[in-house]
Length: 401
Image (tube, rainbow, N blue to C red; front, side, top):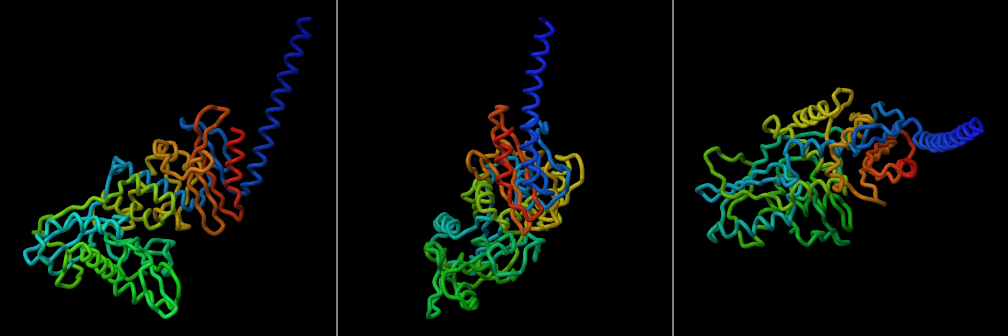
């Protein structure tokens, strides 16, 4: 009788084990089919690998690389309460100097706030010239993967740029130009560039690769918004470094803290913001002026310490370059330490995640809660092929782990 009981127990165990094995094999095969020759990795927050498929294969990450840039920036700064500064100086001839430090949200609304704050300090006397200092960043920084088109996503980085280095305009059927946003006055440069497009309707253009033009437009916009707030200029606009003998007249800290900046970065997958962070990171760590090399060195050093190896490649901070390479396991390693900031990522159906998309590159990385295990898991999906199954893959993983 005892032997029969033992035999029955063994049969039940084998049946359950075989059922679970067949079930796991079924969804694993499904993931492999959906991923093709791509890579998938799932870990818990302790680093235990719960599922992996070519997890050590170096692949192009696209925009999920923004998580790495954000994490390295937080690590270096030490707080998500950081705010980008912009400094103002006033000399004895009432020339106003503006020195930028790469604030990615130096936009029309922010300039209006500055004008309101600075107006009472100027004793209602007109200013002379407006001098712009963008020397915190090196000139002519070229990001790999960014083309020289007039598309907004190809706007170039700089220490003192306004409205993401873009202009939003409307051109009527009779070539009358107006600003397409209420908060932004139309300037001479904006009107000229809009007409040069030869287009009608409402559209956004960037300021291309001409850094002198970028500064000229920034100066025009500053003067126009300052004028709306009762601050008059009698002189023109020049590019000039702040003299060392001048003391700071006013320091403006952005109304957006780093948490706000990162939420915008992930929501809109803004390449310019990501590389503004990378460049500032390099200048902060190695000293100004900011250069692409300093930025990538700072990010590479952070990742080298995080991964404890050097089998990755970083050429910029947004993921726009195909020269960036990282593994799915390395992404999960990053996600484990980024966990306290997971809610900065877009959320869809309970999953916090960042997408990445280039031609024949589809990636997804983030977090889902495992109902079977009762804890949060990190996942990374990197497909460098024509398959667009990243959302289907994460659904299979979430349903079965």
